[in-house]
Image (tube, rainbow, N blue to C red):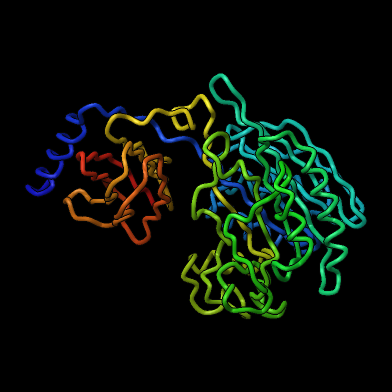
Length: 414
């Protein structure tokens, strides 16, 4: 170890031991929820697409995967056994499959992340909308998450049929108990935010059934390069190229609260979309969002990109819930996960308004990232850290305020 590294570690030990009046707590758990139209799976090309789906799942590291355009129980079994359980080292389960009159939905979850409660089907004129009720057991409580997977009618000129389907869904959502946590996701085939089906889901009345768009990007999504970064369809040039935002994850208002499931800011992702492939294939030339192998897999696997978001788990009795008492000074929490690969969550709390700075350092004490720098209001704040081109190894992140500084270690493993 160099002299500079030794000096830096000595300072870290000083910070870690001599922090007056501040109590640390572990960061809450997270759930990554994926929505993916997997293009008439398995179909005749299923065996050839299985290895591509494995690459995609391995890169996304999901906890819950909800798919549209699955064709049969055999397709569910194949996706469960040959994709999910081969792509990851975790055990997965599938929600009981319902074989409807057209293509169907399916839901898979990582064992240990949540547990299955129930499922039911909401009938529409074309395809069933599937309700999946999952729970996350916590100390002294259980948090319920409802997921609704919809594949609305496709085609320009079919706006009223999509509205009819969305109306049936909204009426069901309106009957949920106040405070329910839910996600509405799937292939909505919407061309613009002015479509009545979109307004039906996110509009008034402001009741328990109202959905919200986490990225809130209103406009004419179809064939508009201004929305290139949120397009999800089509991955292939011969299908028209990337020019539509057909795939969505909407949420209840409670998902923006601090008890139960909380949306992690900036985690909503059209996976593999770097915003530079408007009207062309997702793997054309260089893709700056994912490696070439993943861009190729996204091209081969489906004509849609998967969409995901991350939810922090905040039970009311947890230190991370609304009732958490902020320490007399400030708190920097352990990042989660740790060790981590492509991302980790850093959370901190401050008791009074003021200037803060959150930075990342390597073992030599060199600053490698500044995650936050400016004025913040009292409360709990979360940062989603992507290490980018940083090498594997030990790093430290520090929170500096007018009342002092705290430092914590983390491990990057690529």
